[in-house]
Amino acid sequence: MTELLSFTMNGLVLGLLFALVALGFTLILGVMQVINFTHGILFALGAYFAFSMQRYVGFWFALLLAPLLVGVVGLILERLVIHRTYGGNPLFGLLLTFGLATALEEVIRMVWGKTGYSVAAPKFAAGSLDLGFMIYSKYRLILAVLALVVILLVWLFLEKTPYGAIIKAGASDAEMVMALGKNLPRMRSFVFVIGAILAGVAGVIAAPIWSVRPTMGTAILMPAMIIVVLGGIGSFWGSILAGLIVGLSTSISVMFWARISDIIPFVILICVLLFRPRGLMGEKSILEV
Amino acid sequence: MGSGTKRKGWATGPMWGVFLLFALFPYMPFIGKYLSLGTEVLIWSLFALGFNILLGYTGLPSFGHGAFFGIGAYAAGIYFLRISKGVWGPLLLSVVVAGVFAALIGFLVARKRGIYFALITIAVSQVFYFIAFRWDEFTGGETGLSGIDRMDVGLPGLLQIKLAGPLAYYYFVLVVFALCTLLIWRIVHSPFGKVLQAIRENEVRASYLGYRTAAYKWGAFAISGLFSGLAGGLYTLLINAAFAGVLDWTQSGNVVMMTLLGGGTVNFFGPILGAAIFIVSRDLLSAYWESWMLVYGMIFVLVILFIPSGILGLIGGRKQTILR
Image (tube, rainbow over the protein chains, first blue to last red):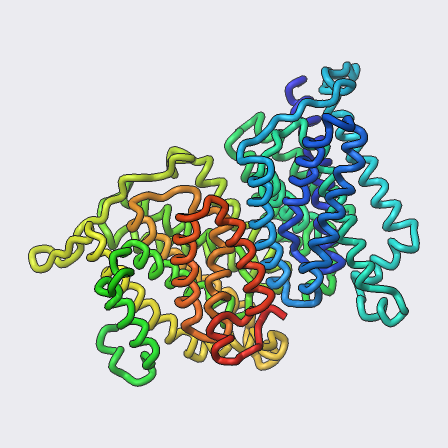
């Protein structure tokens, strides 16, 4: 029983982390219609930046600075090339970012080396905490809380600020938003940067529980894509729900039949798509035209 | 279908040119000695031609076709090691198994377009990578399958051709490639192929003409899966092994790249040119520089940005592309 509890907790933590990555991915996909293959690289860069600067500035500053740096990288990528793919065939953006991601992964190898590093959890978060019903790793609890806070901030931003309203309007009718005098290119850059920062934050907080290695970006991209399709493209709550489903099912299946743990998210995805073609919470959107 | 090649409409001048070029390749100065590279070009050309039925002719952006190549590769290996040694058996199983899976996945995606189509093909194709990795009794897991030799082919007692040597296998693959190229040519120029092109241009209009477009897209998906699987089976026989690497999603990216680079969206022969350039330059780059993936990624970006209609599109002066 305690075993099931700890696998469930691990699944929840994993799910929140997945949801964080998927949220940025689905935001960029929903607003700009770009399947952003560099999203995994941005996640990896978050982890690497934090790894490199933690020694000097400590955990909290790294948590703040590394995602901002990732945001800058995201802005450069978007302004330099990715913005050219807006409004094109989805294959255009997909292939362009696929090429970019391949090149950038190699850059990571050149800068930080081919082998991975393990990152220690910050001192204040080492060890475990007695929750009353179970004893659980302190760092993973902090991770979960951080992920929840960031998710909440994104929700507040999208739902409660005028800028969030413009972004949502831009996702459903870009031309109309332009006609109303809003600066659409700037808004899109902004959305891309937000997505990049979300990936960066996830990378920073994931670093201590996974090792930091060049392929970590590619490794997170696949769950993110599954989650986005499973939850429904462009759906905020869909991403969170699907993230938790994928995290929990992966983690709990390890306990019963370890070898299907990688496959179970795909099985769930296929079953859901057969009955709900737009995913759990997807709505009919312009993406289908 | 041998005698059918004499009929008009079965093959054009450029096609005979391509076949002749490949037939003479082993005897060309300097490059002729890289036989297995030539075989690899033929195999990937076949894969890309099959894939182009979907991308170039139907306009469907599948980013998961590496799965069918990989399924074909494993099917050939498993047939050889578990059922019976041979050449035809493994290749037949490659085609059948890849075709069945392509039909199943095609059923799932046939009603989709655009981003949904691309994302679902990516996601679903990855399941096979994990299966290859985890089901080790069947697929050899991380070590993969090895010891898949090339046996002799021919009629018992009459004719025996030893495929073990690289030259014999090159010509064997060339024959398979030529037959499949003719077949694909016929498919895309048939009434069925015309409907696919109509779907590419305007699916709604095609459906108003009374065509059940989802069924046609399903058909295109399954057919392109068959050829991809055959290419995978040929690849297993080339390297005498099958690894999970053949199911990696970069394979799916590679075949898209080859098809676009050569100009598959504007010319039937584009995928062949693209595959040749891709395989040869990858071989050269990886031999000279450890970080060749950087160059590879950058070239990918530049091609997509500046010559999206591919080399044959550039030469033919055709700017139109499915990318924009």
